[in-house]
Image (tube, rainbow, N blue to C red; front, side, top):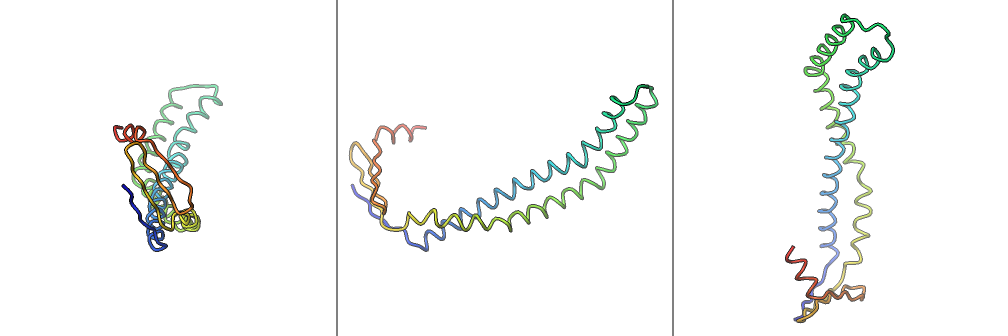
Length: 154
C-alpha cells in the first residue's frame, strides 16, 4: 500500500504558529514559576531566616528575650507578607511573564526554517514487513514492522 501526500508552505506556517504558541506558553509558565520562586526567596525566606542565622552565629549571649524578639519579628513579618508583600510579588510575576513572551520572537525566527525541509511531496509505503517513508529530500527511512508493533504496544 502506498500513500502520497504533500505539505505546502501555508501548512508549514500553521504548524510553526502552533509550535510557537505552545513554546511561548511553556516559557511564560516557567518564567512565572521561576520569578515567584525567586521573589518568595528574596522577600519571604531570606528576611525571615537572616535574623535567626545572625543571632545564632554572632551573638554570644542566648537569652530567652532574644528568641522572643525573633519570634515576634517573624510573626509580624509573616503578617506583612500575607497582606502586602505576597500581592506585590504575584503582580510582579505576571508582568515579568508578559515581558518574557514578548522577547520570544527568536522562537518564531528559528521554527519555520527548521520545518522548511518538510515542504514537498511525501510517500509512505507499507508492506507486510516494513514501513518506508520517503520525504522530499529523497532520503528513505525504513522501519521494520516489529519495531512498529513494539511501539504500538507501549
